[in-house]
Image (cartoon, rainbow, N blue to C red):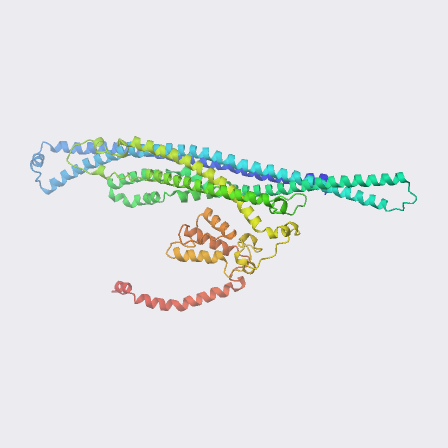
Length: 630
């Protein structure tokens, strides 16, 4: 390849890399905008709720005053009557008069209840919404700080990848140049040796000495160029190894950010929001239910909405609203240079000892980091549970505010023990904010540690695979491009990455032949999990699961892992069913051939027609049906 073509190819590779990094950078900016927009929408929603309940409190106050005026107007007319004197004495009245007094007392009671309701709206519900608004803004600011740190770390990783890629290109170009010069020296040597083989009887002695001297010079030049070529070749191999290791670490870091860190950041923004909103709305529900039980039918709709305040599903919807911002990007692929077809870390003899030492160092450091990070994780989870306990206190029941007596206590004294008037509220909020501060500090520490572990683990695993296949290293470095390695005998133990056939969106028969699995692991494992935990689940195969969890399970199966191997139900059943549906939906050739589909439907319909009369007879003999007929 000529020099201009080589430079053009290098520019195209760099331009493609820069374009991909630019897209990721734009995604990071868009993610921050989405989170900020979500916070603004929440604050506006809370402001609207405050305005709504403030106006409703005014209406309830006016209604209470009108009821009180109504009761007072008619009570004043009866105070001078004999009936009123008899009522004050022993309350032994005729039934119509007693009903009249009870009606007036009920109006006064309703007046007091509506005044209580207005007070709860003004001094409890509205104040709760104000606190939620403050908490949401504070949570967003703290999450934004962590997001900026994660973005900076991610860009550092991408810049590091760019640097090692440029270094690899430079050393590889120098290696090619040194090889060219070495071949040129070899050609000169062959030409000089050919001249030395001519008949020498007619050559003077002086010319013979000159030829010998020239041959020695060429030999020395060849030796120097041979040494230079060996040196440059070694540098090129090391640079390529470093590029491949950094490439693996970069892809792992980017994948972790989009799949895990983004979810954690959204959780931070949501921290306490749903639970606090749940408490505020339940305060409203409690007041309304105790005021008028006949309104339960309409309020049940609101209660169902309150019961559905769940951060996990809201987060999933939020991410689905902005798929372009939260969809993980494509993995960075190895960009070969100048026809270099080696796409694996080289474990040849010159660098094998160095790679082994580096692998051992990574293994030791990872062991220490994982222990430390696990402790930080436990502290973070314990702190999060403490915060959840703080924001899920069931303090929204105001039924005691509607317990009536003959006393003439004011409305304020009736609600003197409400949520916001308790002396401990200031201390509770201070403790909550202090705990939040500690949680964010530990979360930052955990995320930074897990990011470092992810990068080091990616390098460690790549080195482990490389050093474990040392006997195949020479074959892998010399085989022609686009020629797959020979399949091993024990295919069941191979990693998923070595299968020639695709698991998802592939051909089932080809996969079975290549993997040695009579039934694909994904089918067997998903059906086993559904059989254990999903047979009584409502909406199985109909309700969609979490797209994030579906992608996680899918990627684990594609790596040859079995994420459903343990017997603990730590996966959402709808997500597992979604993975199974995704697998069968993507097969190139469906399980039931298209040309036999109509025959299959006909068989099913025939079987149903034969079964229906039998089932109807059994149903008619059922005790419930007999009782209904009787």
